[in-house]
Length: 123
Image (tube, rainbow, N blue to C red):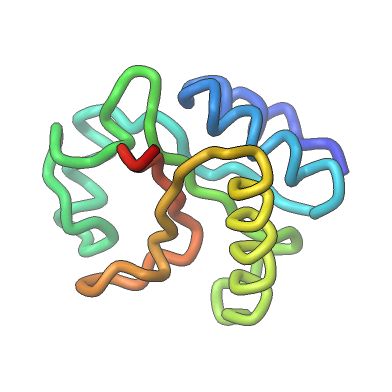
Protein backbone atom coordinates (compact mmCIF):
# COMPACT_ATOMS: atom_id res chain seq x y z
CA UNK A 1 0.00 0.00 0.00
CA UNK A 2 1.89 3.09 -1.10
CA UNK A 3 2.12 6.04 1.26
CA UNK A 4 0.42 9.26 0.16
CA UNK A 5 2.51 12.19 -1.00
CA UNK A 6 1.83 13.99 2.29
CA UNK A 7 2.85 10.94 4.33
CA UNK A 8 6.06 10.55 2.30
CA UNK A 9 6.91 14.24 2.85
CA UNK A 10 6.43 13.92 6.62
CA UNK A 11 8.39 10.65 6.71
CA UNK A 12 11.32 12.29 4.89
CA UNK A 13 11.85 14.52 7.97
CA UNK A 14 12.68 11.38 9.99
CA UNK A 15 15.85 9.44 10.74
CA UNK A 16 16.80 6.98 7.98
CA UNK A 17 15.98 3.97 10.21
CA UNK A 18 12.42 5.23 10.69
CA UNK A 19 12.07 5.86 6.95
CA UNK A 20 13.23 2.31 6.19
CA UNK A 21 10.89 0.87 8.85
CA UNK A 22 7.72 2.71 7.85
CA UNK A 23 8.29 2.19 4.13
CA UNK A 24 8.63 -1.55 4.81
CA UNK A 25 5.44 -1.63 6.90
CA UNK A 26 3.55 0.38 4.26
CA UNK A 27 4.26 -2.35 1.70
CA UNK A 28 1.60 -4.49 3.40
CA UNK A 29 -0.36 -2.20 5.72
CA UNK A 30 -2.62 0.78 4.97
CA UNK A 31 -1.20 3.57 7.07
CA UNK A 32 -0.43 7.29 7.08
CA UNK A 33 2.35 9.34 8.64
CA UNK A 34 0.84 12.24 10.54
CA UNK A 35 4.02 13.63 12.10
CA UNK A 36 7.77 13.40 11.73
CA UNK A 37 9.81 16.46 12.68
CA UNK A 38 7.90 18.86 14.89
CA UNK A 39 9.03 22.48 15.14
CA UNK A 40 8.82 24.73 18.18
CA UNK A 41 5.31 26.05 17.47
CA UNK A 42 3.83 22.59 16.80
CA UNK A 43 5.54 21.08 19.87
CA UNK A 44 4.39 23.83 22.23
CA UNK A 45 0.86 23.59 20.79
CA UNK A 46 0.81 19.80 21.34
CA UNK A 47 2.07 20.30 24.89
CA UNK A 48 -0.50 22.96 25.83
CA UNK A 49 -3.33 20.94 24.25
CA UNK A 50 -2.32 17.92 26.37
CA UNK A 51 -1.35 15.84 23.32
CA UNK A 52 2.28 15.69 24.45
CA UNK A 53 3.98 15.66 27.83
CA UNK A 54 7.11 17.20 26.29
CA UNK A 55 7.92 20.86 25.82
CA UNK A 56 10.01 22.08 22.87
CA UNK A 57 13.41 20.37 22.83
CA UNK A 58 12.27 17.48 25.06
CA UNK A 59 10.58 15.38 22.35
CA UNK A 60 12.31 13.07 19.91
CA UNK A 61 10.13 14.76 17.28
CA UNK A 62 12.29 17.87 17.79
CA UNK A 63 15.52 16.27 16.52
CA UNK A 64 16.67 16.95 12.95
CA UNK A 65 16.18 14.42 11.52
CA UNK A 66 13.29 13.39 13.74
CA UNK A 67 13.89 10.37 15.96
CA UNK A 68 10.13 9.89 16.27
CA UNK A 69 7.27 9.26 13.87
CA UNK A 70 3.51 9.18 14.35
CA UNK A 71 1.75 6.61 12.16
CA UNK A 72 -1.99 5.88 12.01
CA UNK A 73 -4.08 3.14 10.39
CA UNK A 74 -6.09 4.01 7.27
CA UNK A 75 -8.97 4.64 7.33
CA UNK A 76 -8.38 6.66 10.49
CA UNK A 77 -10.81 6.27 13.36
CA UNK A 78 -9.35 7.58 16.63
CA UNK A 79 -11.83 5.41 18.59
CA UNK A 80 -10.70 2.14 16.92
CA UNK A 81 -7.96 1.17 19.38
CA UNK A 82 -7.77 -2.41 18.00
CA UNK A 83 -6.75 -0.96 14.60
CA UNK A 84 -3.96 1.03 16.28
CA UNK A 85 -2.90 -2.10 18.20
CA UNK A 86 -2.78 -4.18 15.01
CA UNK A 87 -0.71 -1.60 13.13
CA UNK A 88 1.56 -1.06 16.14
CA UNK A 89 2.24 -4.78 16.49
CA UNK A 90 3.18 -4.92 12.78
CA UNK A 91 5.53 -1.94 13.19
CA UNK A 92 7.18 -3.45 16.27
CA UNK A 93 7.61 -6.84 14.55
CA UNK A 94 9.10 -5.25 11.43
CA UNK A 95 11.46 -3.14 13.58
CA UNK A 96 12.69 -6.29 15.30
CA UNK A 97 13.14 -8.02 11.94
CA UNK A 98 15.17 -5.06 10.62
CA UNK A 99 17.20 -4.68 13.83
CA UNK A 100 15.81 -1.20 14.53
CA UNK A 101 15.36 -0.45 18.24
CA UNK A 102 12.18 1.53 18.88
CA UNK A 103 9.75 2.25 21.66
CA UNK A 104 5.98 2.46 21.17
CA UNK A 105 4.05 5.34 22.73
CA UNK A 106 1.33 2.90 23.72
CA UNK A 107 3.71 1.70 26.42
CA UNK A 108 4.31 5.15 27.96
CA UNK A 109 3.14 5.28 31.56
CA UNK A 110 1.95 8.89 31.61
CA UNK A 111 0.23 9.11 28.20
CA UNK A 112 -1.02 6.37 25.86
CA UNK A 113 0.25 7.57 22.48
CA UNK A 114 -0.77 4.83 20.05
CA UNK A 115 0.53 6.47 16.83
CA UNK A 116 3.98 7.31 18.30
CA UNK A 117 7.17 5.31 17.63
CA UNK A 118 10.62 6.54 18.60
CA UNK A 119 14.18 5.35 18.27
CA UNK A 120 15.87 4.11 21.44
CA UNK A 121 19.55 4.08 22.29
CA UNK A 122 19.50 0.33 22.91
CA UNK A 123 21.73 -1.76 20.65
